[in-house]
Image 1: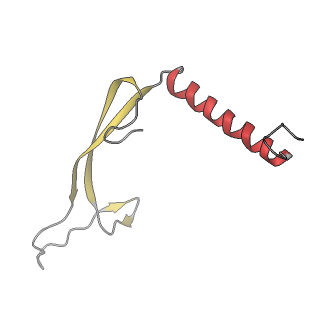
Image 2: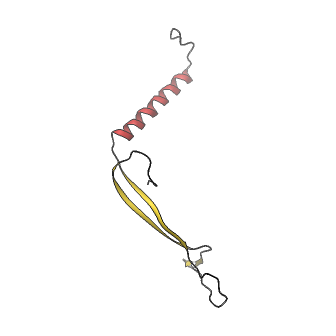
Image 3: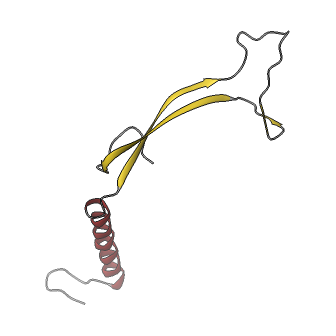
Length: 94
């Protein structure tokens, strides 16, 4: 095909252009028309479990379903409903 000045365009170029345009259209629809709400999360606490300093008199181990957990920790996540549509950015998004 010859599109007067664009040179010789092959089928792969046309398919790539259609895929690129389709991707941009789907992204725009998802971003600006669906208006999904967003959830954000923040790690409040990530503390290891154990006896510090380690003592020879006390042996502490954490088990989960019968198996010993090698490096146990307690994690506290704070999950909030941001209440508005997703506009990018934020602490961590789900």
